[in-house]
Image (cartoon, rainbow, N blue to C red; front, side, top):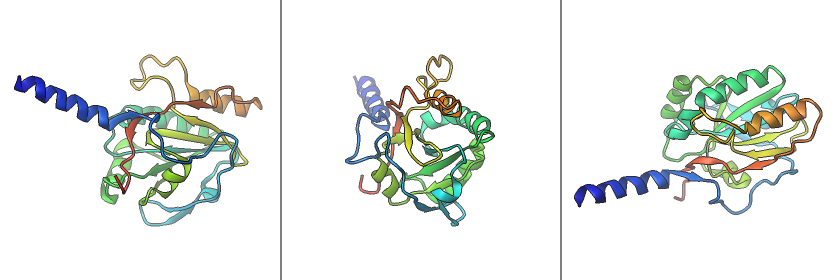
Amino acid sequence: MTQKIAALISFLAIFAFVASSAVTHAGGLEIGAMAENFTLPDTDGKTRTLDELKGKNGTVVVWLSAQCPVVKGYKDRINEIAAEYQAKGINFIGINSNSTEDLNWVKSNIGEYGYKFPVLIDKSNALADKWGATVTPEVFYFNAKNILIYHGAIDNDRSGKTVTEAYLKSAFDATLSGKPVTKTKANAFGCTIKRVAE
């Protein structure tokens, strides 16, 4: 009986940590909206802006976490996609909004996971709240004019073994070919962002 209770508690803890973005915060950036320039520090304390970091053919802002197992499962895909498409003028910007992850942990995680793009610290969750980001990983893809054209999951398989819909790459390929993005939203899944007030 004790083992069953322990197993149930463990399951509920995992379920609470790994969630879907169906649980949303008020507001949020809608498809077709323009992203305003923002200013956040990187892990070295240097002030960075969207206008400075955006790509000539578009920009991806991806919410990350040092402790989320779903992000860990996606790290290689994120790095591969970033390397492939940054060469085509689409820049990546990482955001960490988790109040439970200190700066040293985040810096160590960047080295461990091998991110080659800047990761900014949204300490007060201001950007996450403004845009409506709820989980990690979660992506916002903007065109060259900073218009949001895709929001949600990177693909449809967290394991990476049976991906049948590569949402983000499909959006990239469409815009780089001068075509409209046909799927502009897909529910992001992952670990809930640990906000300051939570």
